[in-house]
Amino acid sequence: MLKELDIFGFKSIHALRLELKPINVLIGANGAGKSNFIDIFRLLASLKNNSLQFYVGKSGGANSLLHYGTEVTPQMAARFCLDIDQVLCSYELKLVEAPIDTLIFLEESFESLENFENLGTGHKESFFFNAQPFNQLNQKVQNEIKQYHVFQFHNTSETAKMRGNCELHNNRSLLNDGGNLAAVLYKLQQTQFPYYERIVDVIRQIAPFFNDFILEPLALNPNYIQLHWRSCYSKYDFGPHQLSDGTLRTMALITTLLQPESDLPSLIVLDEPELGLHPYAITVLASLIRSASVHTQIILATQSSTFIDHFNTDEVIVVEQKKGVSSFNRLVPEELTEWLEEYTLSELWEKNVIGGRPGR
Image (tube, rainbow, N blue to C red; front, side, top):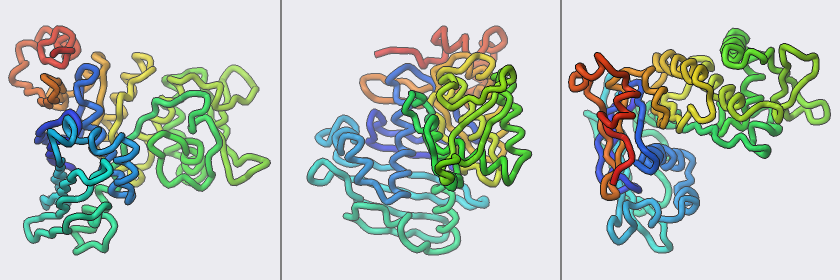
C-alpha cells in the first residue's frame, strides 16, 4: 500500500507530504489542485511505460509542469513510500529542466531498510521500471507501482472509445478511459460468470430498464466486439450509442470496482467519478468504493458535497489554493466532534467550516 507521498515543485504543488489511507477523498473548489495531485500518478504511469518525454511534451513542456515555470522552479521531485509485506521502502525521482523545454532525471533511487540504490542521473526515461530488478523487494515494488491506475470516464461523446469497437483480446484490464469495456465484460461473462452477474445486478439497481449485455464478437470482424445491450421493455437490441452518458459512466465505474479481486489494480485513482450520476447512483458508487477498499487502495477527487457524506471524516482531504499554492489537509475527527453532532460533512463543507470553498 502507498503509505506516504511527497511532492515538490509540481504544477500548483510547491511542497507536500501526505499520509495515505485505504480510502482518500480529495475535495475542493475548481482549480484548487485536486487534478494536479492526480497528475503525479499520470506522470508515474509515463515512467512505467517508458514514455516520460511523450508525457512532458503532451502536457505542454517543462514550463507547464514545474511550479510557476522553470525560472521559479528549475526541478521537481516526488517520493512514493510503500508498505510491502510490512516492509517500508520508497521510490524517489527528481526531474530537472533540460534544453527544448523538457525534463530529464537529476536523480532516481530506490531505498529500503537494507539497501539504497542510486540509479544515476541524466537519463531521459526511467531506469527503475525498465531495468532488471535488484532483488525480490525491488521486484515487488515495481509490480505494485505498475498496478497503479488512473481512471477517468468523462469522455462519453459520440466518438468515445467506450461507444466504439474494441479488440476482443484487449481484455486483461480495463483501460483508463474504459475503451475496452466490452472486451473486459465479455471475458468475465465467459470465464468468471459470478463476477459478471454481480456487475449486471448492480447496474440494474441504478438503471432498472437495463436487462443484460449482448456480448459477442462482431459477425463481420470477429476480432472486435461492441457494447450491445437489451432493455427490459423491448425485444430490440440496443447499441452503445443508445446509452446515456451517465449510464455509460456508471457501467464503467461498476466494472472497475466489481472486477475479480485478483484483477483489481493495487491503487485506483478516480477523477470526479460522480460526474453525471443520479444521487442514488452516487450512493451505490460510494458503497462499491468501500467494499473495493478491502482489496485495493483508492484515491478520488470530487466536487460533490453529498458524495462525502458516505465517507469517514479522516478519509477526507481538503484541497485549497492560496496565492497560487495548493495545500492538502486531512480532516481530524476530534476537531469536528461537536459540529458533526448537528451537521453532516457536506453541510460543513457548504458552510465553509472545513474549507475547500473558492478563495484567494
